[in-house]
Length: 75
Image (cartoon, rainbow, N blue to C red):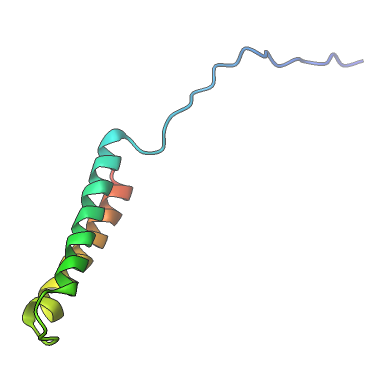
């Protein structure tokens, strides 16, 4: 008859984090950039067609999202 092979129970398990500290820092920076973009979009003036609201703020938000994607994919 064939003998049963037992697997040792003292296996060394590596518990690596998916993201490093640098990834989390970059992710927090990207969230801050997106928040600044939304604050720019709110604006303080009553002019809804201001260049800051229609051009600058959406570009800042998109840059923040792009930076967030970079932060997640950075190895």
